Length: 412
Ligand SMILES: [Zn+2]
Image 1 (cartoon, rainbow, N blue to C red):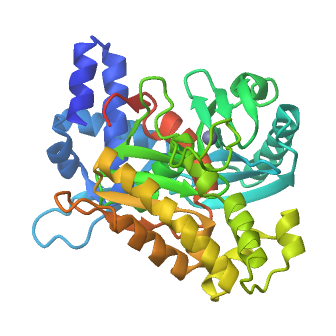
Image 2: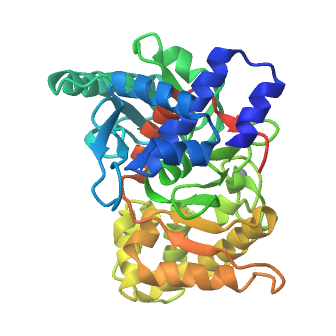
Image 3: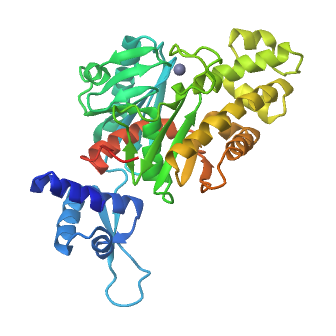
């Protein structure tokens, strides 16, 4: 935080900008440490008591922060604790999957208070755009009905995104290239729109609402594809061109199966839901027993939850498939540890919430490649099924409410 202030000074930012940055620092402290008092804020931020008093008054007047008496102090006048007014405003979150769109509303405490889903063939940009607009209108009506203002909309995309221009450079999952999504959405949605990669949203949601114990962590999502995001003190390491974290297309085996991006043996071609289905079918064809029919597997009609449950229940074919797949998962994730050297790796994905077997094997495979000289990070599994949706709303909260100026940073 101090670094941010000194950077601001170096750039010759004017007083208004410095004040906004200070305001973000205070809001961050109040959000992450409810009940914190002005004196603690002065101590932790290095700001003057007058500046803290002035900015907290502004936040209280705006209705974002409230005062509460603290009763656990023994001597003297009780300091007044500060807390976020969680329902002061809502942010819309939008998630674009290949075959459907999800839109929800989060309050300032990261609680999803509304969500709706709509089927859409999102290989078509127009279909995705139309579903996002329709659902955003439904969400706005809900917010109106409960009398809450909307601060903006965050949209998460599985792929490479340039947040500054609101455009999607490439998504192999959606089969999109150079889509000016913010510009398209802004024709019908009149709130500010923030667009970024889905895993970055998840990492920010963990930072603001769930994880208080790690200053630096790597968030990884494993599902239809794979991507990661490194966060240090809440700042995303976006890389030189903004594409950092697109590990799904790092190559694990040049002789591996062809990936949607055109290369062979990409991480997400070796380890993905589709690969798991294909490998399970292969195991059945090689004689392994399975509760899932070969026809369903070959046709790709099987619900992934059934595969995850089969892994957990000891299904011979599904476990054989996952064992092979987890070896590559372990290699890919341990490579990340060597690149980022994080305090923690937080892995999200339905498979890990559904199967302890899958989680334990993933951790074991990962640890088997750690170097003995290197510190071993915590490996955590995110248990919140709403994390992707919360992540998309958090993109808007982070950029528009919590830290209106601080976007991406230049340090990993
Ligand atoms: Zn690829």
